[in-house]
Amino acid sequence: MEAVSPSGRVLELPYPPSVNHIWRRVGPRTVISREGRRYRTDVCAALAAMRVVRMDGRLAVRVTVCPPDSRRRDLDNVQKALFDALARGGAYRDDSQIDRLEVDRGPVTPGGKVLVEITQIRP
Image (cartoon, rainbow, N blue to C red):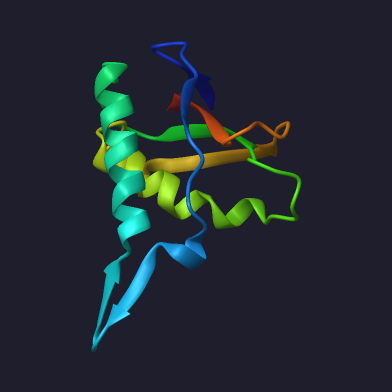
């Protein structure tokens, strides 16, 4: 399988909240937290400003996570909020389209950020 990036672009997005902070219990229901909703809104606005076009088909995603400080962090804790926000913002229909995923830790960056490259996989 060959990966192709129609845009050749790397998306620079805000640092996502940890998976531990994106849901809250309200009585018997589980809802997205205020922090999770704010992050989703910020990513949707960023994608709209970049005029990102939705990708269909099977995808490969490369993420570079640049944490806001040097505290110990698990890379897998930032993926859920990020991928859900990318889908909500129209980068792709659903994160189930992702067949290949690469996640790297980048340098500490004040405020934190993530760099995302989404490419389409040709069979």
